[in-house]
Image (cartoon, rainbow, N blue to C red; front, side, top):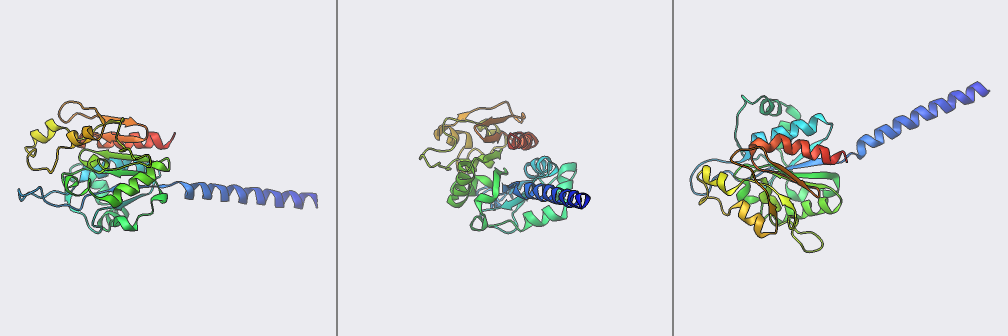
Amino acid sequence: MKKLALLFLSIFTIGLAHSQTKKSKTIQKKILFVVTSHDKKGNTGENTGYYLGEVSHPWEVLHKAGYEIDFVSPKGGKPPVDGFDLEDPVNKEFWENEEYKNKIDHSMKPSQVKANDYSTIFYAGGHGAMWDFADNTQLALIASKIYENGGIVAGVCHGPAGLVNIKLNNGKYLVDGKKINAFTNEEEAEVKLTDIVPFLLEDQLKERGAKFEKSGLWQNHVVSDQRVITGQNPQSAKSVGEAILKELKK
């Protein structure tokens, strides 16, 4: 009888441990990637969209760490892509991953997003972001809620255009008083789009009270301050993913 009781206790303990492990896996909140729906650089006739490497490199870091990633864009559906370089093995890996290619090609609309499901919101760059991130109030509210819930807000290159108008419950802009990084005025001049983009991202972030930090042209530069993580350019994309992972592990 005693042996039988011990057997039942053992089975119960194993079952409970399995249940707890399963529960802990399901509790891990997802990460939301924001990509642009805008496909033209002003009136130049040149195509744009989300920059592939700025999605794939952070995706690789976070996906390999076991995080599930969803995609949202201002219009939903299939977003335009820029920087399409499959010579980059990470781009190729992302593009050929059936699950994630399907996810990004069927991105959610902001109205479909439940902010409480996410630990992090990450704004990927690409010049298109300059036209449809800053004034999207639905995305700003989602980001604000994730941040106020103790989550992370991140962006790279032109992605921080999405941070420009995020306000917190205290009425202050999210970037106010924080160290922030993004595509610089010098980099915009270098690609000859200073007079094409609707605003200069560096200037706008400074106007919102950001303590803007930057390095030279095309240098990897990432800033992390109070759960806001930002990177300067495409070269910083992987490092932004690594900084997000580091913050998530805290």
